[in-house]
Image 1 (spheres, helix red, strand yellow):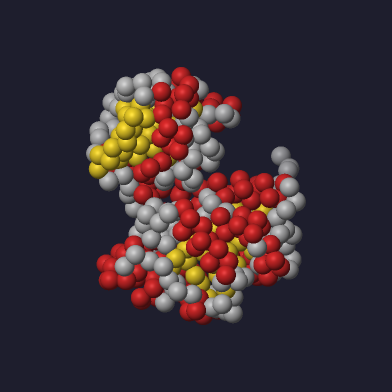
Image 2 (cartoon, helix red, strand yellow):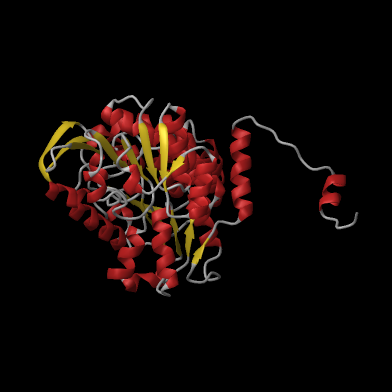
Length: 421
């Protein structure tokens, strides 16, 4: 089935004009992808190949998908989160770029899962995933499709964890490339992108002052580092919760207080989870929190804060404003849940700025090209993008920023390559 034979499932095609404006605005701040597009238009590296992409439907995603289409791919796009879709962007995809989109803000989990299956009905040769949902569903329900898959790329840490589990259990049926392990992705996107957009989501949802608050960050990976850094810059007192001794030590050396979540629960005003795990903030922690504490998640899936179980421990759930719900606990206190426990930076705000996603999606585009160029040469395992590609992306970004760097002289190169005194 080709993309043109797949019927879209979006909220309102009449939103397309605003979506087109937003997409064009984002593309102005994505110079690395523009460079890649120029080459793909000439070389058509994906001619004759079908692409199924499961990523957040945002104006920045439009740049990636249109670059893949310009490279010859027959593309279909589904949302990777039931609440993160920008409906005007989805409409513009369909109307102006002729790319079928299956996704709208507020779709049910059942509808979302049906969209994942329709992405597989496209019979893809290549997959772009954000959370490993297409790949996991293929392995669980449609393993017969695996033989035609050249490979998949994965955008986020959570998806890489699932892919690593597949490889460890010797069940991964095709090569996968963890884009999130590239320095130009996780350093730029996770630290600077998540740090800024998470705080943006919190402030849009709740309109609260961050300065003077105690912000508890669960997880001190690159996303956690970004959240802690930006919260501190806004005047917050930051507590970090970790299970990794090295990361916990690093957080302490950066000047943050480090303690278990059971202790931090009693002190925090705002809680942010960025771990890729489940029930990081659980019911006992929530019952120990201050009256009026704020709970949010900036990890991929919505089970980092145990919102489903929380619903059975409340006397009332009240919608205060969009993306902010008051949960009145049976102990008489209230906590405020942002974005229903889903990605606060994409649900309550607009996700990362375009200049950040320029780097992430450059990794995606070149990652797919790497898989296609090496078709039949790779094992069924999880790969990293080659270091030279990472460096090329960094060079393109520096060039677009008007930044020049030093180069080694022949004498310096000889010195660095010699063991002699």
